Length: 316
Picture 1: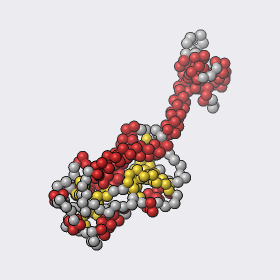
Picture 2 (picture 1 turned 90 degrees about the horizontal axis):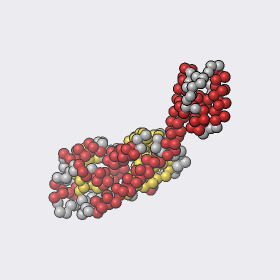
Picture 3 (picture 1 turned 120 degrees about the horizontal axis):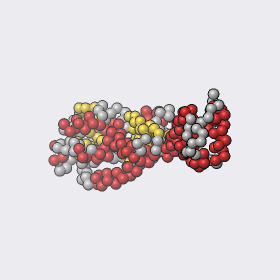
Picture 4 (picture 1 turned 60 degrees about the horizontal axis):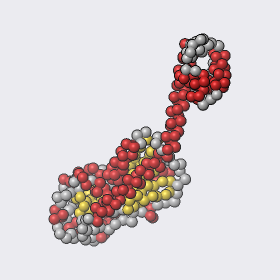
């Protein structure tokens, strides 16, 4: 036997409100329309749904069971409506974001936490990806957006890029590094100490090659390679090694005081950190809301980072 779900919902509303008129008003229907629905439901099941002569209306045992099912339908309908509204507003859903490891660990992961404090019903799925893997993931609809440092010439057709932070690299070292005592740094000072090699595939690898060319060297003493951001910072903090890192990444670690800027001006890449999307791809409202949060967070950070950068006396 198939029952009309609307009839069950109206039965639940009438019993909860205590009368047909009251239940009809609760549902935004007329009293005659609800009375007809209840009569049709009683005829369908072949049993009375209300105890006779009771005011307010009281259900028979069968009426109580059917009303419980009606309430479940009302609850499910409201939840479905809330889900739709939440999805459209971007306050519910899943955000799939890919990003380069150093920036994700130093900055974006914190922003994800801040975002979920505001939007607790949005799930964020993070992947570590460099540019080639990110492009493939966007093309395969495996991620909604990527956060990556990219140059103008690196951007292929079919993608759009929104800058969130201009690129700036520095030489990083521990706060007590011997070179920090030098009043004037020279190129050969950099070659006197071991270095950390960036992750394979990282744009920082080509940046390190640019530094080598600028100081007239073909090779450096690489003592550590292939580590995560935390492992690189731990290594720098315990040794006199040097590493090329984004200024913003070192800035994000300033409170820990385990790594700092060596004030030697190095060649800068023509590259910016930004949000990469595939043109024409469906836009998830939650992903767009997250992108807006990240953009605003970097807009606030940008000025603070610039002031900190300007306070460094750069030598060369």
